[in-house]
Amino acid sequence: MKIKRVTNLSVYLFVFSGAVFFLGEKNWWPSFYEPNFFGAVFLASALLVMLPGMIFKTSDENKKNMVNLVTLTVAIAVILNALGQVYLFQLYKYGFPYDKIIHFVLPFLFVIVLAFFLEAWYGLPIKKAIKKSVIYIFIGCLLWEVYEFGVDAIFKTTEAGIYGQQKLKDTSFDILLDIAGIALASYFFYSPRLFKKIESYFRHPMREIK
Image 1 (tube, rainbow, N blue to C red):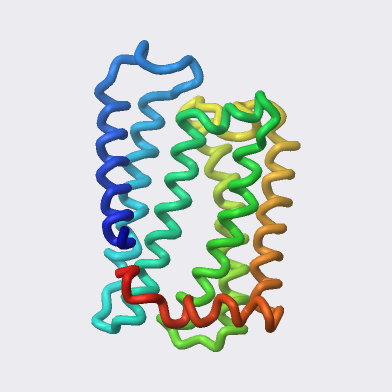
Image 2 (cartoon, rainbow, N blue to C red; image 1 turned 180 degrees about the horizontal axis):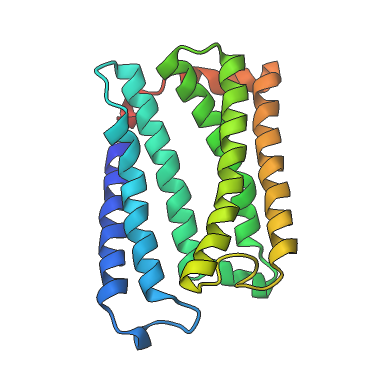
């Protein structure tokens, strides 16, 4: 399936799900659900998926493909978060750290995609693009933690920590995993063998991803 179809489908699903959360009865949902908050997050997720295409417009085919890759990466991130919200974060009760996996995988993925995007879109040397990508993604990871504490304070949710518990310990571990994901992505760039495996795809994305 082409990337555009996948990302468009994700937008439709987020809008539909957000509307259901807003319009549905509270007794429809499990006790750990926060329907109004989930509705707002899902609608915001739809906007986030659309945002790269709205901001970065070009007639250059390679740049278009890079925007599509960024859009797909954003879609993956918000889908994984949404799946966590509706249930998978609950898997910690059974010893499966779903949220911790996300905190490692997404920074790793975003550093790689953003570095090649910066190279393609702004013509940066790849080493400079890597450094900027690492900085931007690390700042983004920190802002995510601030966001969790912020929405908890404003909307009385339980986003930070483990459903509002062990906030400092859990947040510290999340940041360490973010750093580990970023470090691994950086290693991919500075290892000649690994870099060769990814550069041909990210520098010249396949046409079927449009």
